[in-house]
Amino acid sequence: MSFLLYINTMSLVLLTLMGALFYHFLRWQVVYAYYLFLAYLQDSKLRNRQTAYSYDAFVSYNFHDEPWVLEKLLPELEDHQGRRLCLHHRDFQPGKPIVENIADAIYGSRKTICVISRRYLESEWCSREIQVASFRLFDEQKDVLILVFLEEIPAQMLSPYHSLRRILKRRSYLSWPRAREHTEIFWQKLRVALDSTDGPADQNHVLNI
Image (cartoon, rainbow, N blue to C red):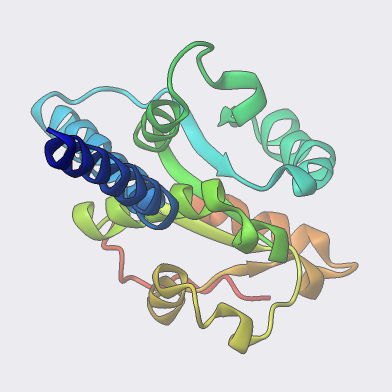
């Protein structure tokens, strides 16, 4: 009896330890797999019925970069260009799981604008957003992703981010620091990127300034 109790206790302890290790090391892999599953469902749904997009672009950004988004990007695109953007704090549906909100936002928008900074690269949620956007890009093979760098980031800092490096090998991007006083060129190129048709994803538009 004591031996059976010992075995049961040890089994429970081992299961608890294994569960804790699984949660600690693999929880983001599980979340990522869930993201891809939602993306697959969204992609299949849109293939089966031609639904009009709700937004011109979903803006993926870290909350530390929100001042630039609200003070620069939003006035230019919504007020001056008449675009309709999807933003986390304003347009996500309350009560819906965030992973579903993100998938709905990416697949419910014609484009996804990723506002890249060092803070963005450090954020787990931003990483998931660009991964789902990348999944859509490579799956649909359409020009649906726009990269905007808010700061110069050395190549060695990008080396751990495989999805982003893969995208940069095939696509151009916009750089806010390089725009400097010629911001009108920056906004013009962003306008062209937003207006581009859903052509092949590997059609590399000249965005760098």
